[in-house]
Structures are given as C-alpha cells and as structure tokens.
Length: 74
Image (cartoon, rainbow, N blue to C red):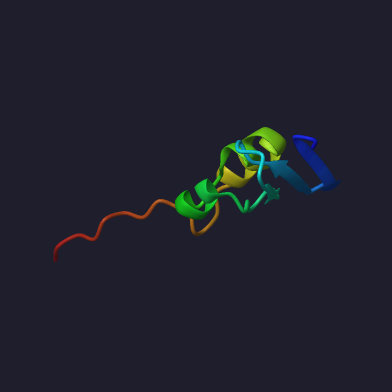
C-alpha cells in the first residue's frame, strides 16, 4: 500500500498510522479525526498542501478582518 495517492491536484488519499484506512485530504478539509475534532488544518494538510494552507490561514485583510474599536461609554 502506498503511503499516499494523489487523485488530482487538490485531492490526496493518505494512509493512517495504523495502515487500516485512507483519509481524503484537500487544502480545506481532511477526513482524519484531528481535523474533525480541531477543525483543521491537520498534519496531512500541512504536509501535502503547505503553500495553500499558509494562504488559507492568513488571508488578506478585508472588512471581516478589520480591527474594531471597543464601544465607549456615553
């Protein structure tokens, strides 16, 4: 069994440590328990999509990322 199999540019099958299943890994999701529990990114995403994950975690600032000033008491 190969340790991973790339189905396309953005889909990779990665074998588990126990070698009893494969996880489906994309730049934005993974079927492993770590991603499910933590919400990502997991070690599989960091390994196979390092460039994409970096830009996904640090998107360019926009209206949602803008700093908001605390409300002042009147």
